[in-house]
Amino acid sequence: MRLFIAKSCSLGLIVAVLALLWANIPLWIHDFDQSSWEAATPFIPNDAHVDVVMLGTSHGRIFSRAQNHSRVESLLGKSVLNLSRSGGRGVWASELYLRYFFERNNETDTIVYFIDPWVLYSDAWNVANDLFYDEPLDLSFSAFLLERKAPIGMFATYLKSKLTLNWLLEKPNAQSIESQSLCRVDEKAVRKRIESLYPNGTEQSVFGKYKAILEGIAQYARSRDTRLIFILPTTLLGDLPGETQLKQTLQELQTAYGTEWYDLSESIADACLYQDHDHLNTEGIVLFTNKYLKPILNKESASDGTQ
Image 1 (cartoon, rainbow, N blue to C red):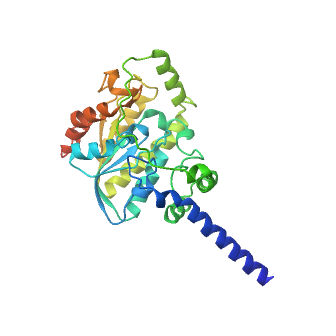
Image 2 (tube, helix red, strand yellow):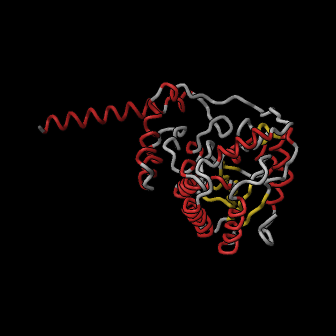
Image 3 (cartoon, rainbow, N blue to C red):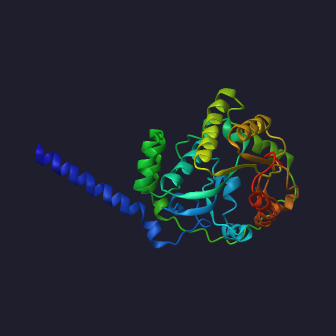
């Protein structure tokens, strides 16, 4: 029996090592950076200082895609770590990535959180099982997920997704500029997009759950003596369900924790600066960074926290 157990453990260890090797092949054969890959964990340093950490959904992620990352860093004159996640990742993921950043003994001066109202109204944007499918297999991050009690289904999907042929074929996105231009607003497409963002409507019990996590982020930032700026990202979607309630929440957080918030949801109206109805193209990113983001970051603080 002891021999059987020993052989089983040895076989299990060999399988685990082979799986880990397989899962890391893309990182060994390619040079990824924050512009060419959707993953975040490979770029989180240890014992380092970063000027700005970005959080949010794809509305934050576009500041890195298509070589926008280097453009934004150059325009700001600051180092940027983009922890924004595509696919509608909500406040649950933002809080988790932020804590992982700090628990690796890193520091930042400023957190810029591109916050959308819809991420507070559905579990689909917060605890979906494919939340980390595009993150490479990492023992430290795996242990962190277990420590944070990530849902078992989510963790299992994270592991299984690394053992597929699709993962093995991962390679950098070579796109150097996002030049697609919308130029015309399609009201039907806008309505369809808004419907897709609110699969469960605006249920208050769900909002309350994720509002508490948002407050936890504000508390955590203050405990780290870190400036936290919430920005409602610019889109062509118009007024969104739950937006007023989100603004009220941001005002409460400002009063309680000294955070800042800026309503820039309608700051850019030119459809030609968008690649679709709620994502800026590269020209739009450059304009937004120069006209809005840079002046906000260069303030020591905002007198009332709003714009």
